[in-house]
Length: 170
Image: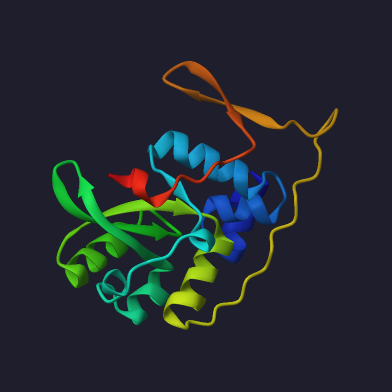
C-alpha cells in the first residue's frame, strides 16, 4: 500500500516505487519480472551492439521510451529486434519501435544502470541515474530470496539475476 501511495503521488511504475521505498532490490524486481514475463535479462554494460542495429531505432525514440536495441535475431520463426526496455509491457513503445525498425520487437530486461549506460555510450543521450538504495532488512534480517506464487504454486526466486549473453537470444 505504501508503494501504491508513492506511485499515486510521484508517478512512475510500481516496481520503481518498490525500489525507491527500499522494499525490494532492483535485482529481486528483475528476477520476478524475468520469471513472470518469461523475458531474458541482459547486461548492456558488457555487450557490443553493431552500428546497423543502432540505426534501426532513432535517438528520439530511444530517449522517449528508455529502450535500447541490442541485436537482430530469430524469435518464434520471425526476424526480430531485441530491445532492452525500461518497461517491456509498454505496447505503445513496442509499436513505435516496430514501426521505426520495420520488424517485430522482442523486449528484454536490463538493470536501470545498464539502460542509462547504453543510452549514453551508444546514442550520446545524457540521462541522470540515481543508484537505488538497498532495501532495509525486514523482521528477522534480509532474506536472500523471495517466494512468489503463480498458478497456486510457490516458487523461490533468488536475489541474484544472471544476465544472459547476447548469442543465447536465438
